[in-house]
Amino acid sequence: MRGTASGGRMLWETLGEIPDRRGKKGRQYPLCSVLVLTLAAMLAGANDLRAIFRSGRRLPKEALYLLGIRRAPCHAMYHYFFKALDVAAVEQLLGAWARGAAPPGHVAIDGKRLRGSAAAGHDGSAGVHLLAAFASRLGAVIGQLRVAPETNEITAALALLKSLPLDGTIITGDAEFCQRAICRVIRDGSSYYLFTVKANQPALMAYLAVAFGDAFPPGVGQGAGRHAAAAGLGNPAA
Image (cartoon, rainbow, N blue to C red; front, side):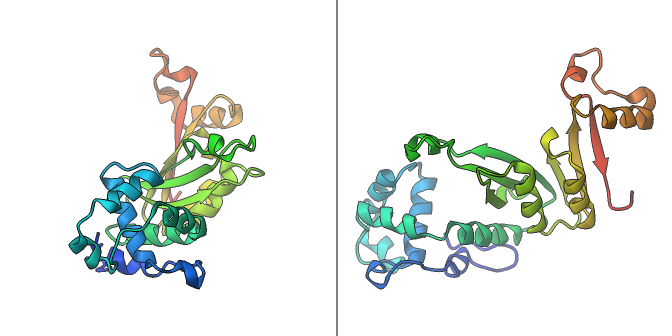
């Protein structure tokens, strides 16, 4: 857990920059220690607070001492800890740490609903919807935003892309992101984009047909043209 990115920053140091929003009485366990315990448990297959708690209890005292704690936290501690955790700060700092390992290269943006979030809320909401930027070269999410219920992925994508160092990267996504504003942000960041164009944008498809001539649309005859007729590529020099 004390691995370093190529920039030399330790993960432990990065976690230490996360603001601690707990009250004084709730800081019996250092924030870094709890986060490392949690990450280790999740890497070992834990997928809920009870499993994380049990994983911590199984650690030997020597391992706990290395993390600066004398005994493993109780189950209730994890509940209050994550309730107070500044999630946005965690996402921002860990994304920056991952980006320090190497240039992102190809970055795929996509939105997904957080599994189990709708049922957990018990309030009839649609659940938590997240938009993430995944760098395939790094094998890590380098940026993530929660999509507010009153907005959409397009609005969130604009904010997410503006927060990332785009220079020289290739941004890919589905047809929803094939928007002028998104392409403009990518081009202004000296990067490239590759988005699917569907038949719900007939004018754009017509322009592509003129630009690519006989090579358009790709996949015709194999059924692909019915769903995703063409792909658009943009670059800073165009």
